[in-house]
Length: 431
Image 1 (cartoon, one colour):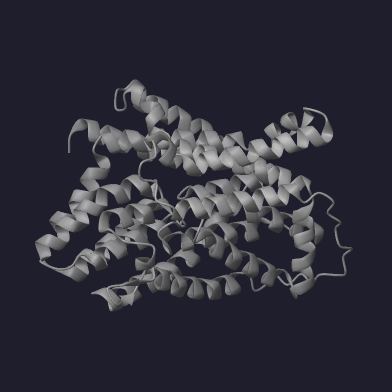
Image 2 (cartoon, one colour):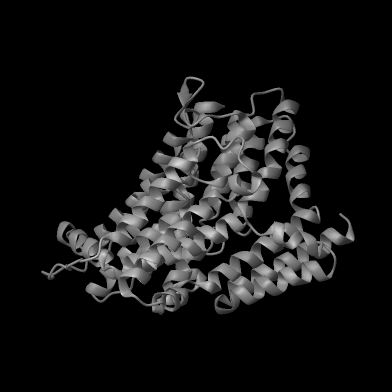
């Protein structure tokens, strides 16, 4: 291991320790760390812009604005009233919202799912005067879980599909066997029982509440239309489109949806004041945090840290498929809890192919283990997945600063139950 790699690992470790220890300073810590990587020459200045995933940033910012308009329409309050009327207590509200988040996130981005559903949980919590923290965390981890269910559910699934040549249907049934979709659903079922146990004391009973009246349905139509566009675009081939369009189509859709929503409000109100109000509603702290993290990850990737970790599997797995599988799943869970899983998965896919070739076996079980561990591992910590960061940003804006340990009291048992279920099923089906 050369000096540059050692320095990169030390700087990376210090960065994430700072993110965990000082949550209110996370954005500034990430930005400073990214700047240090550039200053010491580990990431050329000209590559900084390319290192940031602008599709995620644009989508996140656009959805924040659309959701702000959605909230102002009072539709979340009406939906909260309807859910309250159907559920016996707050425990079942949390479970129902988590299940709904999982269904939605199997087809659209996890962050967009959290931004869409979190306002419902907050509104319900306000109506019965309790903290929304537990429900928001449950929504975030459930959305991350279902990201691996379909080809379009998460970037890591798209990477896997491209590498293996999988179609949308292959995630359901592959070579005559159950695909990843059913493995994820089994993990979701087990993890729901975990949530029922964790929230067994959330028994606040609802009293009769006057139903909210909604007079403006246009923001709701804009939100639903944006979500449907994201689903449709994810299913349409992008061959022949310019790279800048194909790589950022989701971001453009969300920004366009926000622009239409703002234009509607400006015409309706005959005032530009809505621009200032929605600008304040966008969580710039979270956008800066993600931008800084993208630069940090690019820095350690360029320094060879991710490559070295990936190559380690090929050397220590030997000729035992079970050991190789266990190592890949376990290490993917641990590593994805602290770093972005996209560069990790992109690097590990060819490594997994090499391991399978060396063992003289079909690497499918290793591929599926990799994607399961890398996707679900992000749930372990509050900074392991963009959806978690977005969820904590939403809570921060409504006055709830969540300590990492409180997040992990829910995320750790939830993640371990889902990962162990997936680990066992993938081995039984594909080994």
